[in-house]
Image (cartoon, rainbow, N blue to C red):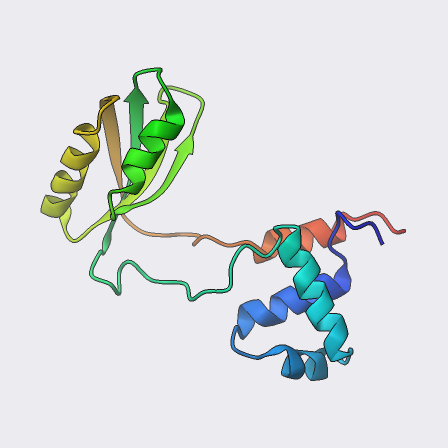
Length: 162
């Protein structure tokens, strides 16, 4: 097996832990009918390679009192995406920031407690040194939530046999 690929067993391990994150390595090994050491070694290898990016709980902004989601495109002074990214990271309602191509320079996913609160959050973004202009769209509903398991399955299915 090539070390830069995920195989069928890797996928089965990751799918099981995604479905039942508290299962534990021993129980996972029982359900998958492989040795406990195999499951642990695979998880360690996948973590080292960055395939497994975290194991903490997934939080719901809505359940935390932030039901409004918006996407903000920022046009910035061309003096450093990293510095502005660090400034935006200091705003708790900023969930993600990506450097993008197209009409803007950065794309932010933000949350707010209400539409009125959204204005406060946008004002915080605009007040950041280096942000010249923003454009905001409010998400009305989530048709496909953030997901990676279909991508995992596609990666395994496209892996050429050894």
